[in-house]
Length: 525
Image (cartoon, rainbow, N blue to C red; front, side, top):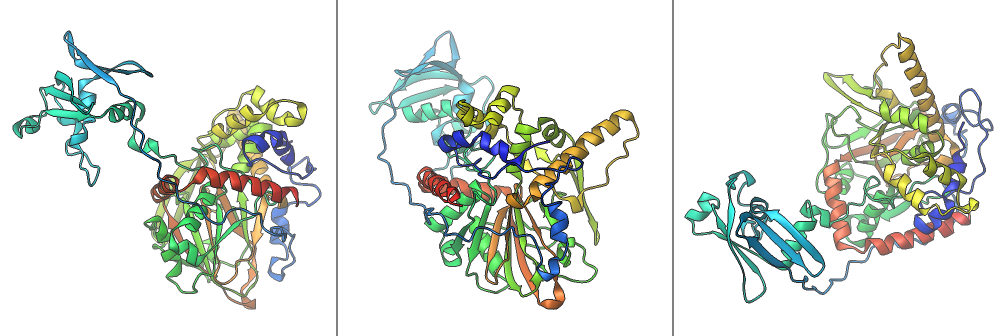
């Protein structure tokens, strides 16, 4: 019904020019006509479940070849010499003193209301905190401009009529703007818009991957904790691929907390701000058993699920228990190109996700593909045909990236029971969603789409919980201990950190070097 590699080959030519995100060199996969599983390997999930405790499992580990020559560290941005902004001219009409006209050599005349301009007053913002010292609601609705003049330094002094009363009482009735401040005020909705947010759903260069196109980044504990260029490179990798391994971590219970605090704060849940992953009787969570744990995201029953998850390995002597990772955003991209109706079913159908145990009850409704856009038939055709057809696919790839879901939610153990489809229309909708969910799961679990790694004692994996699905093969607790420590980081702490990295480090140069290195590496696999 779909061909995994075909979607990737379709954009290979454009990817080499536009992004490294959709490249593969594996042949099309034959599929079972009933369930769409690969016919050559039967169901990946069942193969992983069978014989796992004795280590008899299909090989899905990462390549043993030398890693790609991706730079280990980001360089700090060089401080650019401040360039004065081109001057602007301001004037107010005597006929309407509530409007100010701003224009310049490259700026057409633009009228702005006095109330909006008063709200942007530089002198009404704390120089140390950047916080406003007034509320927009304090500005009188009939505020107007009394006069406009340019001082000897080229700044514009705006004297207000009907200003905020408490400012007038303190003798403050003038705002002073530099030309650059006026230009920025016209072109930014929020101050933070000056800082690019490197996330897969806001920056179209974030890359999708499979086992043959990604060599997971490793960073030492010392470099992670130093918080400089190596940490910045690891954070950028999390934005790009959603998967990083920290090595050489001290084997103590507090290490996972210390590593996660590099993002500023931990996301606390009813499990605490850190928790243990060990096999135990009468487990309240399937993760606390020795059974096979399928690919999933964590805590989808919360209003704001964690963005990052940390899992620190303190002990791993048991037979089995390999960690599994799959890029759900990659699978979403393939379905959007080749099975748009199935992708739409996953985007349009809200599912319930719940937790009801130990006196805690949580429930949320969200679709598998959150915030997915639409691809027109022409774009899908170009991507399916690929560069080999002679088409320039760069624009089509860009449109695909722009339409990707903002988040992918998938956690079968915590999915609520589906409502009974008792009408013909409901049965039709259920059949469409069921086919889409089956396709999605089988694509996720294909051997070539998964990275499997046995965590060593002292390893910590960090991954994007809203994109990279994780799981674990079964293990035999009688053969040895297996003990992980976990922690979460929320979306706000993630955004704060990635903005800081983008502001302080030369991210574009790093991403270009990363793209070239991974492309050369994958071509040699």
